[in-house]
Length: 512
Image 1: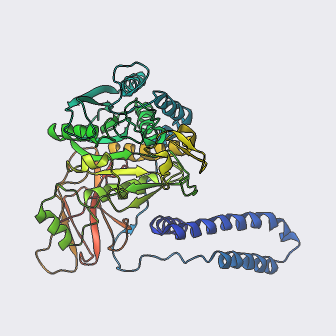
Image 2: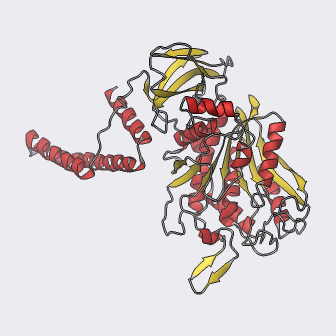
Image 3: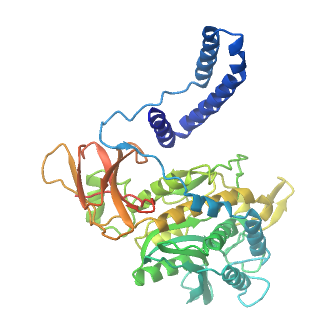
């Protein structure tokens, strides 16, 4: 039991520490393995070396390794003291790990190459040419999704954007989204989406004729959606997953706005939207290479909140605990592991400066949504005419030669781990409240009890207010309220649901 506790402590400290601390812990782990191997090698010396001398030599080697690494001690979260155990992140089940293993980099490459082959996918490009333009790309995406078979229901839905209303759409233009729906077996109206935009652009946003290959922006994101649709086609998640390729992003988020409005009007309970936009390159314009990380942009509070709601968030210090950032915490927990090969790095802002994306359309409807983008962008390969500058030696244009296919494959695994974990877990707890009627040193939290057979229990999670992720978990059972021996003044609380299959929902912060 002591060894198990140490392993749990080590993993929790690793998970919740800074990136630099994580690197130090990994270094120590490697050094420990090296020392262990050394012990095995020298064990043969037991016959000729006294136990005292052997112990002295090994102790000296271990002390040297620790000193050289400047290893910080594995500290418990000692303040505030509280109930429960350190939270251990959810790890992919064998079923999920097997699905993610089936992600095929060659298929991802073929998807990106095919989309680039249409020359331009500008929203205002030709819609009837069978070989060039956005119309040809749309037809191919639809046919590709249909070829996956299984339980997927493929649709093309859109509307006509009137010319002149939007300065980026001079003439009446059909804006069409292509998507495949995998209907949930238990809660079909609870919905999760993964999306990329299949339109592209060159330097002039009103140029619908010149080449605009859009390999990274955003054939890479579309490839993620399509590959996940393929590997999940025969699965039966509890909630609905929609795999989307939207149009009109470069012209003002037109396709995603239409889709989000449709889902809102239909009364769908969208509990998560994952937007993959520019997820194709591990090397930036600054020369930095980073194939192990992805940025996740997390807006704080949605514009749909009333002023009273915003005041309540501020009053209790919960600006960092809205539905969007709770979704982000969940994604970090279930995806940053050796199965995906990617460390998700939250960025607490809606998007990069001067930029925007399709996740915003869902946030505007009150749905939690996040954006994934590579760590180091190259602006010579975004929104640029394809050309070579002899004076600087710079190749401009969003060409496939700048896409790292293995990196995109890991991003697909990360998205897949998040989607599958979300859609197979119970939905988020509803009506989560904390009792503030009296001055007490404990905390009573209440929520609506879900009596369905697929729900096993609830857990209360908590963290010191300055920590970005949940650090502790208290199992409270299949109940609708619980009192925790911990003051609500000192920590942030959340409630999450746990299914009989072991999958856990994102947490919901309680409000008075």
